[in-house]
Structure formats: structure tokens, C-alpha cells
Length: 304
Image (cartoon, rainbow, N blue to C red; front, side):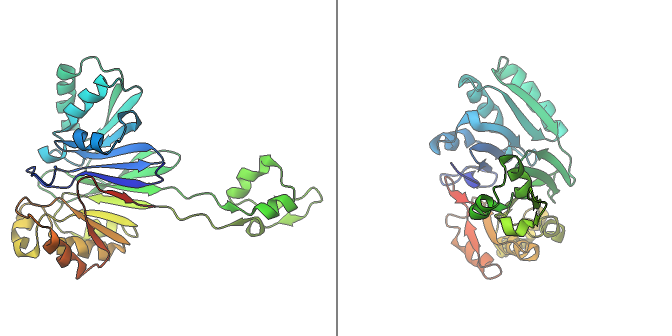
């Protein structure tokens, strides 16, 4: 079972190519699937990667350009045919909820699962929370209202020192509190500090999805300290003026954002169809931020 794994379904830009589908990703958190964007072909790659429809309960749509959402109706229809159950929540702008609600009423009248729309806005806000993670929207700078998504794992419990638990004969009822940081008082009234009973918890993971956006330092500020950042890199710096006009970034600008944010790793994606080889994008970014990799359709990346 994956602990925290990123699955790239598509990392191209507006026009699909023989090498890249449009934007779509799935984050697998302990076998719970979270989809980010759903361009054409997403469900096919999902099948090839053996990602189960039944495990997908949340879809996050960053904005309403076709290369980020035109695969949604087909995916939801296929999920209905596969007899998915339970509830699926689509986190989307209000205009998109209205649009897809009409499509679903026509193409997917009798889904065996419930579809809910959670309306998002182009602002910083927590839009999802479970016992393990939170998901926040991050305002981006595109030609239409657009957000990124920041996935943050909640602080983990401390690790028990088994020999100390046995030595002090700590009752089962006290174990969870000690993992949370409580001290222990023996039946004789002796206080045992938590530091004697536990060690530091494992680090929590954070992941930021930033596509599509023009270069803006506010993006870096919004994801300060993130472990891994996926940032669009539609062009090389040769086309920096075009990138700005179209609300996109170059690979060098993506690297600058990662560096300013203090990220540990950068993943480049949303490549223009003009590139048959993205090595130039990678090389440009690595001159600024060395720990950079290229996304690719079908790629799996462990985030934890």
C-alpha cells in the first residue's frame, strides 16, 4: 500500500500529443485516491496504472480550461458503469459545477454513487480535511480564475519506546495519550516525562500543485516550506514574453518559485506541444534549482 504517492496521468498542456495527455494527477494516500484535474484521456491512464475507481472519492479541478476538465464527464460515466458506490465530491468553481451538473443529468442520470459539488473560490482556504490531511486552495495567476492545491499531512503521533512502555507497565488506555505527548504518572505517583517514553514522530509530508500560472512571488509565499512542488513549465525562457501574456511560466521561473519557497523537490509539467524533448526545460530549471525532475505520463513518485 502506498503511503503518499503521486501518479501522473497527464502532464501536457492544451493540446494532447502522442507523448503527453493533458493535465491530470492522482495522489494515493494509504490507498485513498485524490484526483487533481481531469484532462482528456485521464481515465485511460488511470486504468493502465491500475488505480481503482472505487478508491477515488475526491476530484479537485484547478480551473475551467478544457485541458484540465474535459475528461471529467467520461470518467464519471465509466465509474457509474463500474458500479462505484458511496460519495464522490468534486471541488470546483461554481460555473463549472453548473456546467457539469447539466452534463451529468444528461449522460449519467442514474449513477449508483452520489456526486457532490464543493464550490471553491480563487482564494486561500481549506477546502478538505480528514484525520490525516488538509487540502488548501492557493490563488494562481492565469487568464481565468485558477487555484493550486496544497496537500498537507497532519502532524503524526510520537513513536513509543517499547522497552520503556514495558518497564513502566503502561496500561493500554494511556498509550494513545502518550503518543500525543502526554507524560505518564505511575500508580506510586511518580511522573515519567514523555521524552523518556517516546521518540520524535516521523515528518509530515506536504505537496503543492501549481498549474496554470504566470510567474508571481506570491505563489512561492503561499507554499513556503513545502516538501515537493509541481509547477507548470510550459516554455523555456526563450518564450518568456509569450508565457507572461498567456498566463504561463517558463521552467526557469518554476525553478525560481521552488527556490523562493524553500521546497525540497520540484517537478516540472504542463509542457507545450512544441517540445518533442523536454531536456532543455529540465536543464534550464536545474541551473537555478538542482533537485528538479520532469513529469511524464504514467510516472509514479513517492512523496513520503
